[in-house]
Image (cartoon, rainbow, N blue to C red; front, top):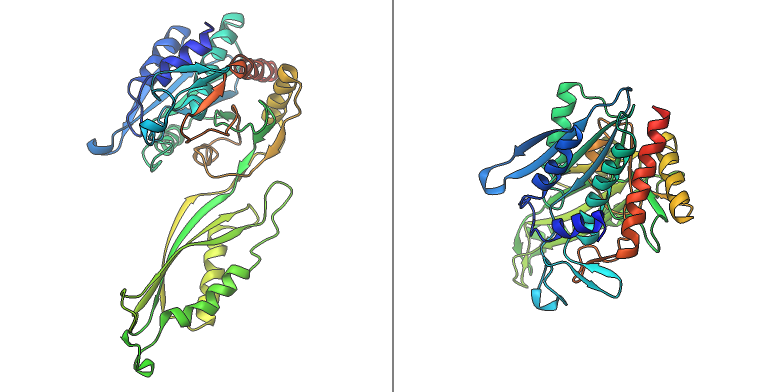
Length: 382
């Protein structure tokens, strides 16, 4: 059994549902410390939701640092009876490795850990500094995980140059897609106020549903921006609408709308909030909005990191990797605040969060080799 496959199975066998790391990071520290890594455990959050974070760094002789980032936590399994095998007992069927976290993202963690081991065995005194940033709170609230570590590193004056987040990004075959950015995410809870009354006497009340609909229709039809070469246009979507008491003869006193922006770098959270407010005020609504910015957009333009990963993918698989900013958010949104070049790259994402999550065994060694080749290329430039 290859070293990567062994480590991947060892990690999958730990039922590390958010935020319980279940000792995964301790396994990594035990492998990294003998290689010269200073391994620091950073716990955060209340006792009822204690998050474990690992920051491990090995200094090189040059001035550049490459970080591999990932998460040991996994989403819940869902109904166990629907799994073909125990989700926390690694299983092999038809060339696939099955288990919760196989694709998202314990195989990536195993692959870049072994890649680091192989690289340092061949290059014991590299110019490149190497670090790992691992959290147990990526699939959950993401409050006490990578964001906390990044804040601490920033306070220390730590300088990061490159970061590869091992999220599963490949679509049809290993290496066909790299995420070089992500859209921002901002949610809002809009409360439109009215006056409750008997539905037979509408002149005595004010129906907030009727009042809000023209404004909501305008918001739904707006073009917020045109996007750019890397980003789709900003999207505004309503997810929930609630108004009424449950009775059929009462005009409600309020209407609540949940909505979300997925926005490009052509817009900012502040500009979008201002434009929403302008529409609501133009329609004369009595309203309140609670805003939550889930993540700022980021973009890594093609440069050293993108070039190195694309070259490594091409050398290992023959695939020309496409750059993309589609999909949801990841911890890259926090790392990009302190690191100028951040990308996401990992195995196929078709089975993530699903019953019978899996990864192709044949992709595991090439994934490790891509990470190792990237280390070699960036070290040569340091």
